[in-house]
Image (cartoon, helix red, strand yellow):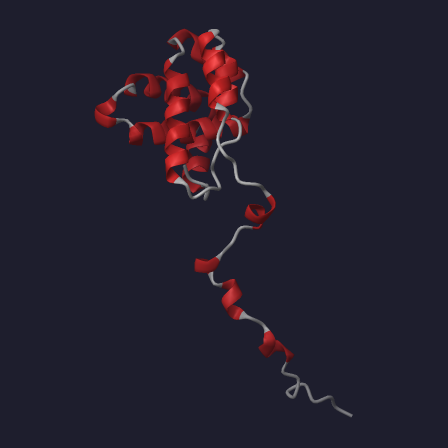
Length: 153
């Protein structure tokens, strides 16, 4: 005998609105806790002790990428820019060698956000020097990863 396939309506119970791209929720967002930003006191201590590389690593740790608090993101960006401007141009390449690829991508995000936030181009020469050095290490891939990443600063 033939089986009546048309009477099976189980396919109609599928919620098609769950697949709407405008309502997309990345699976990683639910699993990872929200970053509260780096420890500003620790970064200041490193800067006062003239340990700029450690200050940079501390400033890049615990980035507030998944939060919607824009004030926290701007505060963290200004902290990272302060760390970046404390470097001499000859020290930049050595500092980049101590960073991982993920940290360099995050650093590129902070460089772009710092250029956006700074009024009248303050410290822009320092940020452009950093951008040039990060670009020399990462190439076009670093820029593409920053612009295509959903987690914005």
